[in-house]
View 1 (cartoon, helix red, strand yellow):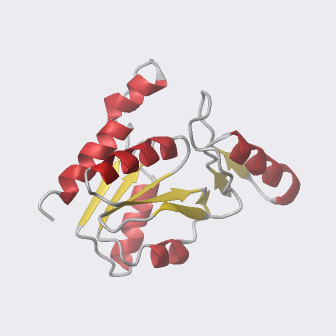
View 2 (tube, one colour):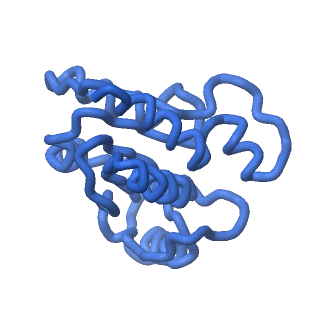
View 3 (tube, helix red, strand yellow):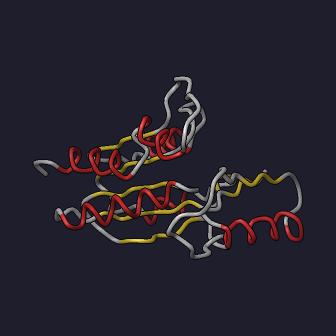
Length: 179
């Protein structure tokens, strides 16, 4: 099964085109409610994309959280913390070997996801790393946790879970402190 995670309307259009006209077998397109953010490029024909480069921390995310990650990276850059932002476009099947070859120099990794921990990308990448003897100085899995998420505006709910740019900035700053 394929699971696409577009981050904007252009990527949504590409994912739907692929799902209807090209892909065989079951396909899901994970697209959240609401409008699109600042990020408008279309990278859906790649399994993942490196959007910014930096050696202090690698931030991996997908879907609408890419906007929060890019804002956090810009905020951290001003503080002298250089963040590599990796955007995952295809959650299943995930080409782990290619993804990890792109992460070969990553010492600190934050994986931010708008989902519960069970079966999430962070758990999958953590298990792959452990099975292949890959270790990080710091690995942070940021998700909604197992709690019930109440109703509210998207920005409020992302803030509640620490999944907004402010929460990511705080976690990356703490992980890089004293390094």
